[in-house]
Image 1: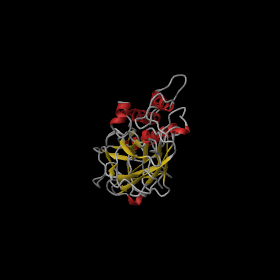
Image 2: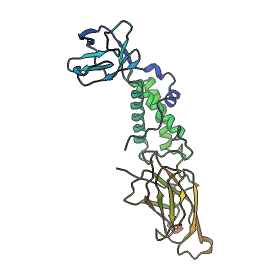
Image 3: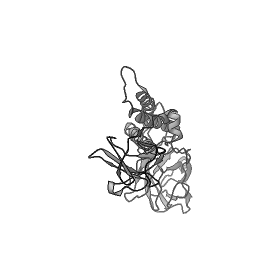
Length: 333
């Protein structure tokens, strides 16, 4: 599965550190000499992964013999850089060549690294990849505080390339950005801050969710409610039409799959109330059961026939001493 990222490389990074653009790593390369024809070379440049001609990126090739107009080759064995101008003609004084990391590629690397950091710090308490916010949008999928934390750690990774992090006796800029982001994640771990998709104390129910072994989709099913039955019940939820949230549909069973409600329901990130008869319960007060269900797709999709069993625990099991999130993630591949 591809690395999930929790912030973007544009506005989120800019908000984390507005002067981040000043950290672009470019150096101007001068002193070119003719190698052959209109191919030029420069020795002693050090490793070059990206080369720009008047701010336009050139294409890297695998050998000097493959260098053509608008391409370059860096020979690591001899530390020599070869290039041919995009015009295919000889280099002129109007051409400025700069070497350095592609800025978008560098920011993408930093966001991926910071997202892995966040998952490592939160994995002991939360499912990873972390679920999207039920109130999220296409442009803001995750909780804003999580995005802010990952963006700050991303900026710290970029700044640390110029000056390694120093924490003692006083943090430098890279270390300060890292500590600011980590402080937010620490609050999630201490339960001083909560994700929007967590089942909190007033929502906690008595459920165990078990995905079937042949599930192929990518997502999380969550349930919350209370249960007054004197015995355990087994319900099921089955995807009937595959797709993303809002397209995929499901049905539910209150008798462990013997029968289903018969009408497709559209999946949603918002809580949906499901009601039904409590099987075998003769107590009038508890004759019906209502609970809430929602889906979190983590940016993926649900596949038709994906199915979960929901074990609804009876009240006789007692009250838990603390709330627990009741969700189940699906590992794919």
